Length: 454
Image 1: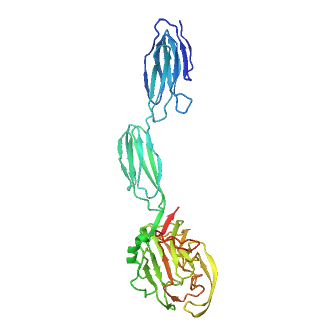
Image 2 (image 1 turned 180 degrees about the horizontal axis):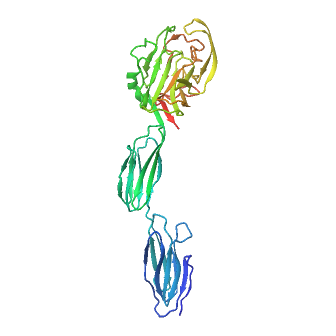
Image 3 (image 1 turned 135 degrees about the vertical axis):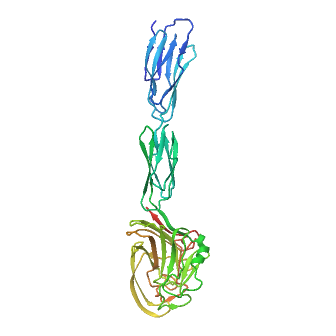
């Protein structure tokens, strides 16, 4: 008797019927396993049976209604049915498994287990990658089972290994990028019986710290290089004193102008260091400047570079409330922050003399906050400026823009005509004061910072 059947190749359930040629039911599967390559194909399996049976297809892609292995066709002769199994290509590197099950009444179910290999990757991965300027290592993988070699023409790049057979991780080592342009590194991988592949690594241009002064940690060093043994007596100049950074390259100096015409009281110009690392100067007058310098260790800093600066300062009562923060752009000094103007005038000097003074001043930093003792409070100064000239170093200049004593304090409104301990200016390791009350926070981990930003 011919086999009666209902067959749907694309669905998981197929029902077959057969004549019973013997009293004992049986079902035999000639092949119980199929192991196929990633490209898939057509495969035949013989099933002999004298009973009704169902076919259940478990070769289903995860999360999908589709099947990667299906019964494509069949041919029946007597009690033997030859099934043609169609297996789709596996485009993944991961193998997959499934089963086609034959379930009959009163017999043990049979299973055709199917394993399909994943593709053997070839070439390289990744083909492109980006790293920051400080990164000095990267890696990529070579796939396949062929001989290969890897070559980079850059003399400062080490490739390891440079040749091999089959899958391998290749490591690159290279120096930090201390330039201000992105760097591209290329490694050519030649695989036998295949094309050349190129691994392209883009290393970002240098950005980050030019110079950083962790003031509290520098206390002992700053005491040795910045503090004066006695008050400065030769002007103008920096008296050979400086503050070296804790990171990066640069220095901080205090440049004192000529004191001719100023009445000397308790200090002429005296550099010192506080117990928490604060470098400060007593006897400061208009015309003096702090210089904050940072460089890229010999590299040219190109025009168009954005520079971020930050520091915390505190002003003495015999200093102006109004200061200028400038940067050197080529040979020109430019404001590092937006500027304002102010008309100031005085009829008396700090020393008590009469004066008829009136001038319009230009400034971009105002120390208008007083502390709880009516002295200058700790105030942050921060900004970003952009150079327009190629420079071998970045230089900030911070100096008094006005000529009258600190607003609201003891010498407010009086013309500065003398040097005094109260003419004090400093960079501070302390946090900025409370912006409403001027109360000191008394935490000491502030920095003076020059850094390149994107």
